[in-house]
Amino acid sequence: MGKSSGSDKNGLKKGPWTAEEDQKLVDYIQKHGHGKWRTLPKNAGLKRCGKSCRLRWTNYLRPDIKRGMFSVGEEETIVQLHKVLGNKWSAIAAHLPGRTDNEIKNYWNTHIKKKLLKMGIDPVTHCPRLDLLQLSSFLASNFCNSSQVNASNCLGLGPFLTPDFLNFATSLLSCQHRAQEFSPENVQGHLNQMLSFQQNLLQCPVEACTKPASESSAQFLSETQLLQANLEQISQEPSNFGWQNSLANLNQDGAECFQMPNGSTETTNYGYQYSYSDSLSHNQAKISNINGGNIPKMSFGSILSTPSSTSTPMNSSSTTYVNGSTEDERDSYCSNALFDRLDAIGLL
DNA sequence: AACACCTCCAACCGCAGTAAT
DNA sequence: GATTACTGCGGTTGGAGGTGT
Image (cartoon, rainbow, N blue to C red; front, side, top):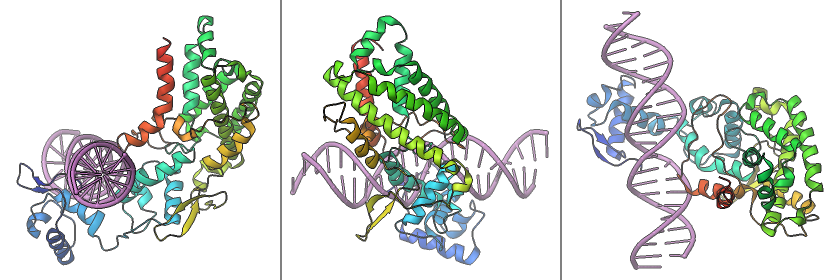
């Protein structure tokens, strides 16, 4: 596993460590202690660079390392700390005895991030995913002149592009880039705008749209309602955006289930009140009234993309996409399809 | 069975901060 | 103060093993 084995230009070995190398390193450190990593490998009889030895020791051979699956408690702690600290893996690891920053980082990227996405939570901002609103904002910015309104209507989006909505979307986008300023006070303002926007949605003649547009309208509405649900939750729990929320406020209600390796089922929603699946099914019941019961089967997660996840409250470094393409491509497929449609009708 | 694709994670890389000279 | 060495950190890579066809 890991990087390719072999040697570098200095004759130092790279790649996976053998049991023999591990033993040499452990024996040496037990006798002489660690530190002076540059000279350590030579003294220990290892053909490795000091950096490689240090990493092997701190991430794998250290006696206080806790191996094995993360517990639900650890997982929730990671989520809560990440909400506050961002990708400060070493800082997060400091709160989890026996876990390394590398291990936590990997676990975040391979497990937790996916769960949050599934719940409709942006894993970078820890806010409800707003990328569809970004798309809408984009559409609005391209449909400002009257000659393009008809094209907008063809997509079933025209009725949504009201002044209220545009104002709301702009505000939310602004908040998304300033997550720490997402206070309960301004959330309430956005909520009011959302309610106004929803009234427009409910009054819009969905049946006048073409079939695909009608489907996207209903999907769009369900997502809007989910956003509203999450915003309500945020406004009711002001501590969600503060450090004081970190560990003390972990709660277990309204949980999303997942299977543990030992077969038992444990539950967590990382302290978020709404799971995506619950909200969607709830909202779909409402939407069926205006869409003739034809609820699109696509999931919320699948229609939204996440590359818009720009910065964390404390860390603006770029997002890591561990698996390169698969999950992200799936997530962005529907948005891409919409962009393709825009492109096809000459709006891009 | 064979192949292709996907997931996971150990290990690497480059940069930044700090200490020593 | 400048330079060098050391250490720590976050992002990224790529191969082993798993899964699907």
